Amino acid sequence: MTNVDNKVMSRADLNRALLARQMLLSRHAAGVVAAVEATAGLQAQEPRPPFIGLWSRLLGFRRDDLLTALRERHVVRATLLRGTQHLVSAADYAAWRGLMQPMLTAAFFGLGDRTRHIDPLPIAAVARPFMSLPRTFNDLRAHLAQAFPDETDDRAMGHAVRCHLPLVTAPDGGPWGIANDPLYVAAEEWLERPVDLQGDLQGLVRRYLAAFGPATPADMQAWCGLKGLKPVLESMAVELVVLRDEKGKALWDLPDAPRPPPETPAPVRYVPAFDNLILAHADRTRIVDEAWRPRIVSKNLQVAATFLVDGFVAGIWKTARKAKLATLTLEPFVPLATVDEAALREEGEALLRFLEPDAPAVEVKVVPPSS
Image (cartoon, rainbow, N blue to C red; front, side, top):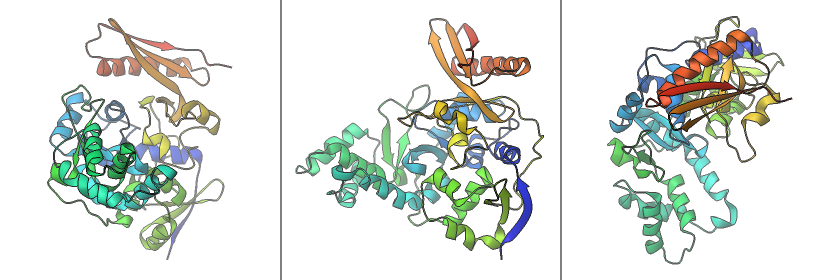
């Protein structure tokens, strides 16, 4: 039996529920592993964003906190949700990687003519012993070219391994833990534990709703890339609750998950590029107005760093370093209220000191909104 709640969730209701679960209504006194698990993973296509994401969510977060968690193998960076690089706990990676395989296989063959003729499993099997030690993908492609001399597209073979062999990134000694040409290693070797090749799909649903609910099956698909999730949610009806949005669409949720009042104060926050706060729903209006989506996501699918005012995306930001000066430039979509601009400047200066600790001077600039 489905537990139906008559409550209609307004856009503001959904916004505050999302911010509460993503640790953005207030900074939390939590450890790195707990925060990465509570947020259901942090997008890590580029090295810096997970550090910024944790800085915006945790009290007293230091760069070394995440670097230590990576080196001690409590947290890993790997190809996972949507076939992109994510930072997740070691336990979540081991539990979730098998669930992602159908999506990763589809992504591999989705390359069309380059991969249609390739059987990825023998290639992954040859790669497995080679990747028992940390190697770059340049190393791997050279190895595969020798093993399969009749296959001329070594990059397609490398992609076969990325999609069909559980790999994680071995951190290096750089300031953000990941080199430009990262080292990868077989996940079972690095974690010293098996990777669940089946996985618990209902468990994944619970974790998603805890981090991003209330939500639709389409929202969850946008987050992880898996299809056919509606029957899974329906099979869990007895333990979930169904709410409605303002259009009457059904939203699934955990009964006891936080849903703060819409008037709950939301401080200004800096959100890094590619953060799942922006990407984890098919309907993103709970966090960003549809009018601003083209300003955030480019045609080549780059996702800009954004800032929040009263809980919603209000503009984009970027940093630059020139000699002794570190600069953060804000590009608001509409004029900022004086109090909000002051709060963003204060928070922005603190962010610059985190990102550029050796900079003698920091500056926050605000660009007037374009017409």
